[in-house]
Image (cartoon, rainbow, N blue to C red; front, top):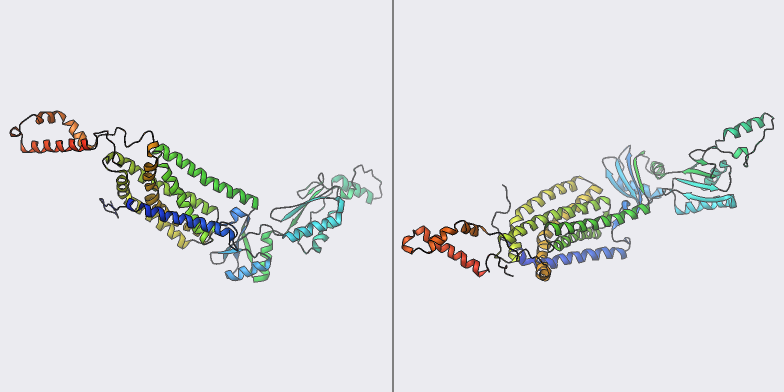
Amino acid sequence: MFEIIKPGININFMGSRRKAFLFSGSLIGLSLLFLIGNMFMPGRGSMLNYGLDFLGGTQIQLEFDRKVAPGDLRVALEKVGYKDASVSAMGKTGYLVSMRSFSSITDDQRAAIEKSFMDKYKSDLFRIRFSAAGDHIKVRFHGPVKMDEFEALFVALNLKARVPQAELTPEAIDYITRVAKGETPKWDKPMPAELDYAETLTVSPKRNEYTILLESVSEKIEEGLFKALGAKASVLSVESRGPQVGKRLRIQGILSLLYALGFILLYIVLRFDLKFAPGAIVALIHDVLITVGIFALFWREFSLPILAALLTIVGYSLNDTIVVYDRIRENILKLRSHSLTKVVNTSINETLSRTILTSATTFFTVAAIFVVADGVLRDFALAMGIGIIVGTYSSIFVASPMVIFVENTFGRYFVADSRQEAEPMDEDEEEEGDEGEDDDANEGKPDEELTEEELKERDLRKAKRLRRKSRGGRGGKRKG
């Protein structure tokens, strides 16, 4: 089997654990400093550069009929009215445009629309509701009104709008037709026949509510870019998310990390021992904080894919930690005469080859994605790469030393200490047990009656008994 680290290596990792704790503490402190500092830094104002997933906004995938420079596209978007747009190239003529502006109309335009309706209809107006994307409004009145008057209001505001077409009920059509013929039919409804509208998707006569369609974000961008660039832009996809949805996703993302850490704590307690659990949790928090801190330092966008990368880092780091913990648990039984520090150090050395190989192969895969990919996928690969490096470091220098720290600090509170329980006999003791009768027979014989080989075996057994006696017998305690 290929091994980078040859068997029998003995690097004193635990001798540097205090320096490692100081280094990790410094990194965590800097990460927290970056997160808090961003809240007070001009142009940032929040801990992280939250993406559209958490703040709300619109993401549009565009395809042009010819190649357009990214700088020209940003200038054109500013002319359309979207100054906060970020542009990412996708292929030769495609772009992914992300912007915080979720609505196609501004707040000033909303206020102007409300004022126009209030001035026109006064007390007849009940309310106006704007859609979150600003692509339509619902206007409700106390009674039916003429819809052909709506268009003039939007023309005066220089806004494009599609006013619903009036469709009369069959009774109203019949009444108007008979009146045109000179008849005098009877009309029993409270509203005039000209306002007896039929129920449609955009007209609700029972509620006296009318839906007016406005220009959508994609339509506004298509037309504006064509005027500014002279290139035809086709909208392939549009994804919009409101601020409230983004806030809910942000809270759910934080809760998902907390739930993951809680269940991992329970798993470690059940799988190993209570003394192992704090180290695993501290290591995972260490990995997440440092990764998030780097994103805060360079103001990289923090979106749902990055949150998925953090959860992946938690799982990856935990897997590496469990491998080391499993070897520590095995060696606690095998190396009973050694201190816990020596056992932990030996266990890390024994699993070092596996740790490096696994981390290196995973890191090279993520690095390839980072080089080839672009946009959100590149940020995902960046988060994964940071997490792999930090996670490998923490499984050696954070999680494992924490076992020693917890044992030395709180070991007296553990009721059942696995190191003091009756443990299986080692190989020497098993061999001695199997040959117990021969031992008793040889002990009483003079040296002259024993062969040279039997004399050596008798001396070796005496040395083993003296060694067990010096450490307190088979059930003796381990040295501190």
